[in-house]
Amino acid sequence: MNTYTIPKNTKIIVETSDLTKLHGTKPRVAHLHLQVLSKCVYGFLGPNGAGKTTTLKLLLGLAKPNQGKVYLFGDEVTDRNRLALLRRTGSLIESPSFYGHLTGMENLQIVAKLKGVPFSEIADVLHTVRLTSQQHKKVKHYSLGMKQRLGIAMALLGEPELLILDEPTNGLDPAGIQEMRELIRSLPSDRHMTVILSSHLLSEVSQMADQVGIINHGEMIFQGTQAELQSQGNNLEEIFLTLTGGADSL
Image (cartoon, rainbow, N blue to C red; front, side, top):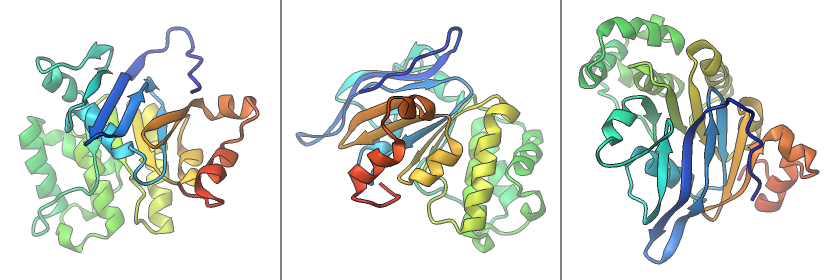
């Protein structure tokens, strides 16, 4: 497996060591060594069933590993410090959940109360995800793209340093995909944030990510920048075509 050439004085925000999760005797995640650098967009790429969502759940403590360690912000995640570290993290795993009979604003107020975040932050996250004009509309009348953006707004409450997004463009129409790309690309510079996003689409990762990790059958088969991958003579597209039999998705 390829590893990063890490620039001097660059912080590693997320790291795993020998991370393994079994389903019965079969590994969902196998001896994974993940490194995510500060203030970047990290594209976590792989076929459906490759172990992407399981890995993200392990990072967040939503699943327990059979072996290995997770480090967030330089500290090993333990039962003692897990909640403190997760307060610095926002996430959207699988489909976001809402109260459909309430407005976007009311849903955000509920999340703000649960997080202990002042309501004054809500206007800012609504502006960031471009939902200010729709904040008083009931969520059951939102489009899928608007719901995805509202889910990200919820994750942004509390000004997290790390944002973890599982297939954020899944099911969106072309306009919604473009809006999501622009939003994600803006977060490291505008909010000084590190973003991990999973995807099975080469086109999505190539347009959003600074760094790439490719996972297949639970194993990391490449990790580095897109420039590093191409400089080795292994074009990213060729790896995808090998894994997918000629498709642009994994």
